[in-house]
Image 1 (cartoon, rainbow, N blue to C red):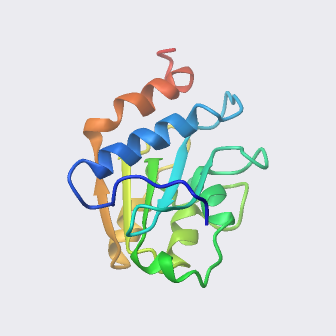
Image 2: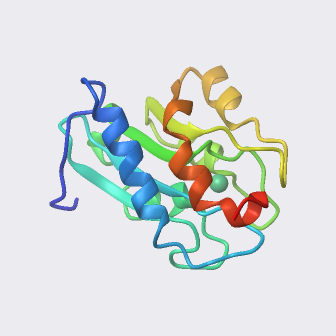
Length: 160
Ligand SMILES: [Zn+2]
């Protein structure tokens, strides 16, 4: 577990704080003309950061959620009360890896998923939020915070 900590998820403006943090993380993504720049962080119930990541961190095919989950032991008891924040809706299918981020999340006990931007149908039709909801996870979308995510991906949207 890292020493980093911040506001306790679910309280007050904590979700907004952590989503803004994911947008900051996405600023570290190596540039790509063909893939989104995304940040993700897993925060325990007490506000401790369990893991964090961003797109293409360790490998050109890395997704942010995948990188964030990579350093967390699957049996870590903190996962059962934690929240995963992602600047973009977790993916439901991908060509480069066998398991989509929503599948990776469903392989953990993580009960709560918060994201800012629903994936535009640019590359694939994403059903990540629906899959996570259907599996009983709490999914919270904060479109009011999507502006920073869109700005980080302006080069893909033709607005950069
Ligand atoms: Zn993904």
